Image (tube, rainbow, N blue to C red; front, side, top):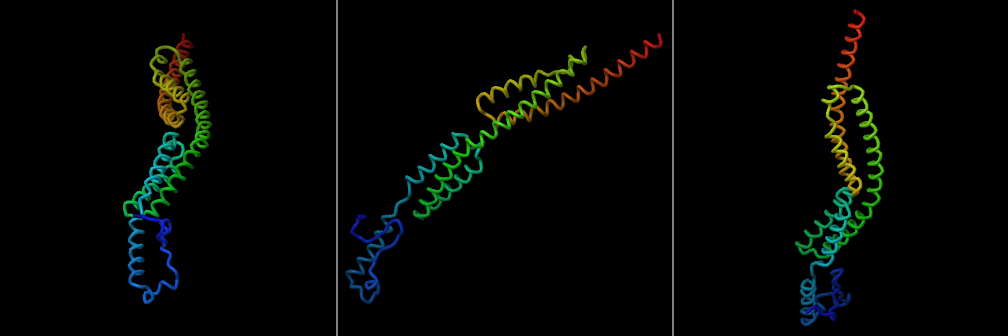
Length: 219
């Protein structure tokens, strides 16, 4: 059994032996067997840091649930790497190293969870700016379409962007700011294509108006 009467420090892996007893020539057979047995017992007493590994995994899970995948990716990755290191060391029976790595993984995961709130606030501010800029540009483009008028304006469809904007607003209200930024990027690309059509329609309308004006002069 792993008793407390043997001078073995399971945290440091050190067996305490008085200096004068260390010389083998001075060790009696009984004491030699005692020391050898204590060494074996110390190895047997070593246990994998199950609790520390579990705590680290729980801390990482908490960080993920808080949004670390989106807002503290590097910090989360660092914690996951530390936990992987701890698991590998535990499998190799380096329990002391595994415990230290597991504690480090837990600390990094907790730091990731804290970073989420800070980074999320930054992303929120940037998202609001992007939303404002996009809405302004889209409103301006819609106004241009309205000025073209007639059948040509009717052929320029804005429904897809309008529907996409509704999704953007829903994601923003739900606090999914990273998703909002991704969707705005997609909508920007769609709006660029739409703007090209508007440019072409405006040129066509200008040419048509010029021809009509020319015909009026001839009359």
